[in-house]
Length: 139
Image 1 (tube, rainbow, N blue to C red):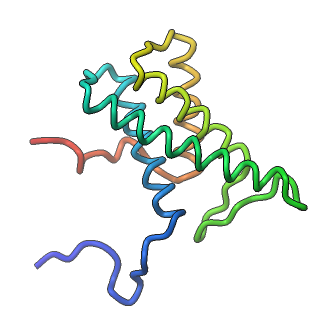
Image 2: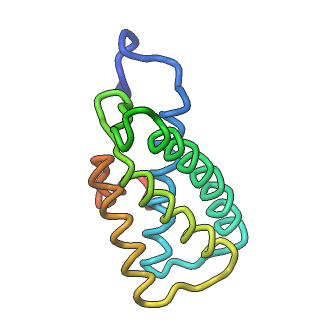
């Protein structure tokens, strides 16, 4: 039998950072689907809006901590990765754009370019390759 995932000795409880990263990756997938012209139904729009609201709140909270702390503009370490204030700014802006799409607004050409830039920066920081979506494809 094929076993996927981490070995039992390396598993742990999910924490708030794991949920943040998972939501960020979901937001990237939603944004790419929008940019690629996939249709958005009511369910997709509500999911985009809900996810974006959570991420926007999380990003603002972390940014407030990073900017107001004694060591301003330092990195936040999550596991093996370090995230700087630029990552949270761009993730927040991406969440705002996704929230607008979820509310039914359409993005203009230059806004789509900005969204793609935010996606690229966020993917680079997370070491997430949107091209590896084979597991999401329906046969």
